[in-house]
Image (cartoon, rainbow, N blue to C red; front, side):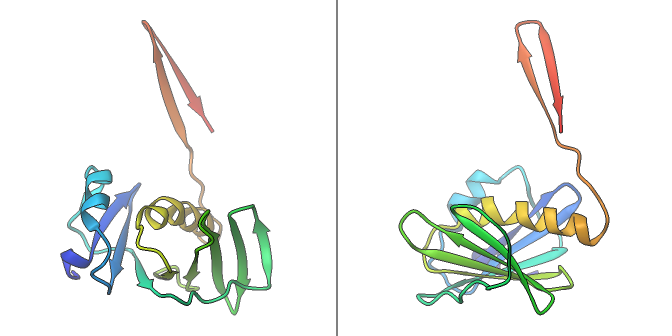
Length: 151
């Protein structure tokens, strides 16, 4: 296991995502409070190395999908996700072809965007690679009735 002061591992579904950073400037306490129900003491299946850098690598010119705050592209077998923030800072995630390691470069000190945005992309891309799918469901209780929504 890696240094607990520099990261943590969370379990989503049956996959352990290890988030680690070399820089001591990130506030892991905030992340631990947000994700305390998902933190595990297991080895990660996918390692996400977070690197603080004033110069974020550019995204790719081979863009496949995008929106106003992210683009997804492919280059040399790697998936590249470029995130744009409201304060004009940027982050880039490079997912290696094996899906075992991700390099995440960011110019800001906030860990919540990487913890919130990146796992969604990893799971969507991994589903395609491993020919799997996810069923998402949520429920709502209204007085004495319950409603279940499946997507």
